[in-house]
Amino acid sequence: MIPTEEQIRSSWEGSSNVRVSICCTTYNHEAYIEETLKGFLVQSTQFPFEIIVHDDASTDKTLSILYKYKNIYPELINLIVQDENQYSQGKKIARDFVWSEAKGDYIALCEGDDYWVCKQKLQKQFNALESNKTIDLCFHDHFNLDTSGKITPSLIHSNRKNHTLEVKEILMADGSFMSTASLMIRTKSLLNMPEWFSSTPVSDFFIQVVCSLKGALYLPERMSVYRAFAPNSWTSTFRSMSPSELKNYYDSLDHSLEDLNNFLGVSYSKEVNYRRFMLCMSAMKNSLFALKLISLLSYLPRSIYYLIKYLRE
Image (cartoon, rainbow, N blue to C red; front, side):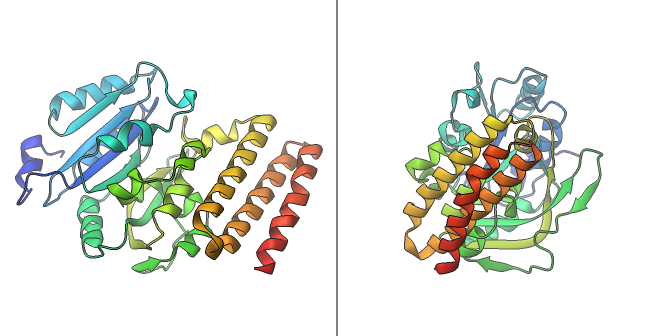
């Protein structure tokens, strides 16, 4: 049963100031967005929170569903609607349109095709960050949902306990290390992302690294669900790329890793070189699958170069 707006507010204690802003970006998610919204609305917290949803000019029924919930929860939901698709114009949706609207001290992220499955998710992450004032990011374990509807526990963090991770551990992983729907981050940290972040082809990995420079709090509870290969998701878009689009993507991502390396300094160059080596290996694998020998050979010397740099440091 989803609580009413009045019932949600009744559990809030103390100040009326918003402490957590739930930020959700959506595009053509009519099959998923209602479940996503319900995961927000059942959150049981002792503090005020708000829900900010950005719709990037959806062409399906996503917007009508959003308006339905906005009418039921007018004070809780802040709806940002675009007349023209901004992603296709190269905009960073969350950074350019959503984060600046957040009133809370913390931002909890969730895309419109993922959802939360724990009513205490926000409270648990809020408590963790309030108890660790020097750390900017908290994340938790999650479930995976495949296209057949099967839900399975993620194996990325098998047997990992409550733990504070150093940024080097995150650099050695990739963007899937932290599910986006598991992230709660101090708002000031997200608003202070470096300028080169605007040109990154994907956001997740760079948010995770930059916001974890003081460490990242991990909670072992599985409190969200990631939809693998959902239509209009990044994984779905990636799989549909042409060979030329893939090359542009890999080259752009490698350039962003260079920007990250310059930003972090020599203390983390070993880990960044490992990440660049793994990127080249991924590019070579995809070139092989697409039978693009020239493309494969173009990444070979680069992969060797980064591997040597990684091993020497």
